[in-house]
Image (tube, rainbow, N blue to C red; front, side, top):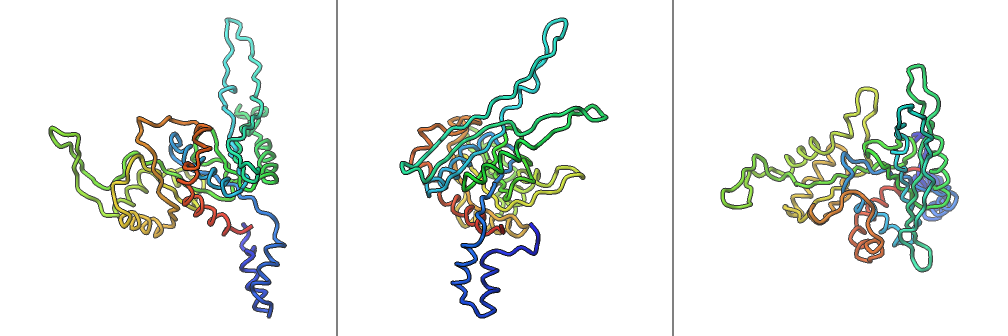
Length: 310
């Protein structure tokens, strides 16, 4: 955003310096400010087990009365249909139609969670080198329409989650799925048991390992790409957390030292009990416990979105 833009609170302080009452100026500024619908993208090196976390955050938002849209790119496998037979007749490729499904809705209709999939781009004639030209107009048009109809838009691309739609998102949140929390190193199996022992890591050492193993994708896009500076960071652990809260707080402090703000630590059931990919079931979404379990992280993320400039 341009640096000269100010938030309503900053503008109200400027009004107060000229003699106006701050609370009155702030209320006036907020009422006059245009409606802001944040577009949030969740970035991850591996997205397989993060759908429950993201949908849980969205459900918690909907539970507070917000209209939330999960906006996902349609499966692109239809583009790669190969011709068959000896004559290799060209295949007419048909793009899938947009699909919209209401996943969760309050009885009064004030809070809703909607899932929408559509084609994000079209491919035009090839360039001089034979590569097709991608037209991103469809996704830009769809997101613009969604911002008029919903309070929060969440981008859920169907492929890699590394860098989806940088120019469309107003906030970038890194989400990391941790099967194994690195609180020990040089681990070896104890003979005759299923136990593993190793040298314990300090919280600062643990944070360094987490950045090296799970956050390098934010910065390793090559010389032509800009590094991503996420507005927040969410961790997801499988099973119980093997350390106490004080340990996690020191990990968060070391992350903050390098500019990574941790918004929370979520937990899910161990791997054998979890489906890989796919949205939660309707029964899971309507469960009050599902939204309640993600409420704290959703509230922290909402604070980040509200604090961002228009």
